[in-house]
Length: 504
Image (cartoon, rainbow, N blue to C red; front, side, top):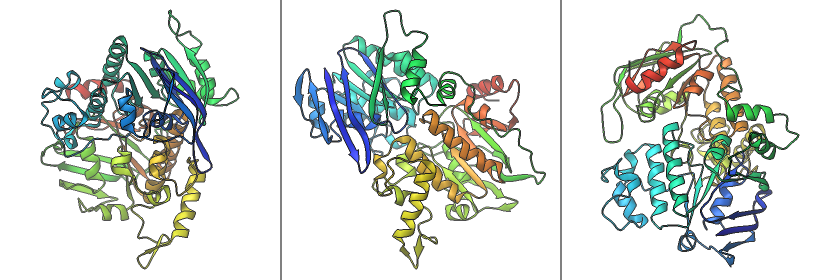
């Protein structure tokens, strides 16, 4: 149905796609697997007409074609759900569906059981926004549906619901391209898996009638990382088992100086789209990672924003025994508190800015980046080059638009920026969400190194395994309240699972 032949797209010295070829047959789910930065998102954007390749050819049913814009791809039956959402926050669900082309006043079946249609997009959780994006993409009744990392913000249950939908679409004759870096998800739902590495298609495997062979995961990992990579075994462990790659900081000696950061009886009022907080109290010690785990939408974002100084609340916050003025983000930042958001493009970066500009946001008025109110471009660029080299960010050009980076590379930019601010406390909201093995390892190494100093880490996560693997103490967020934090140990998992769905 759709074929890409020798597609090449470069950004400066970096080849995002390097003579890449992909074919898509009718009624199959094709997985595109690869690390962050392998060229997956660029390829999908070219197939959807959002990016023009430097060279190569696209064919629809064997006929050469050119997608000069996304509308041309839609008219040829190709629809896409981007990794970073394209929803209008002030629209309601019904207005967004009407804009996408749904002519009926009724919501699509995919949304009808979840929404009345009058909810503003800005009030809806990221997981449900993903479903709205998919419903948008189906409005044109496409022959080919392109999904870019669709499960990166979904819970396990939501992921399984998505897989049921994809299998139904396949039975109806639709073709699906499923981009992911998660090997186990690709093997669960895909008929064929194509592997990209450093912009090239390095091989593919197809499922037989009896299913994937027992050696498929090993073969795919060799394609992803290269046969001579030392970390292939580690990658297999990370992708296929719940065992951590890096030990948590539970074995670090604790100082006897008491709590570093204290939250005492913090409450907020309920308002549209935001859950109220109810008498939340917790503390984070020096050299400690404290995790708050819970199903999405239980108040994690609201509490994280209060703790970072971004949102007003009633109650008391203190750092090293000194009270903080709640709602004064600048004062929190100057005190050494940094916030790593889970909304990379909507909140963490300015999409129209370059990599180097995004790296100094929140510090653009500080020395050495600014003098007498004027930016010093040379110092800004020098800082960017240092961070690009340290974090192995691609593309390597400091002047690359932030939107041309993969999700994993954007996360490196954000973490580099926030760690330059954090001297006391790092608040991290789902920091490894949607990252491949290597990037996840790099992110957690940096967070662990920060915690091994005298800093503390307040981790918000929807992943119970991540909480158990990385944290010293863990609590549960449920309906705007936080349970008492408990040390990680035997039996902790069963307690957490119960509290996540029923409270305490």
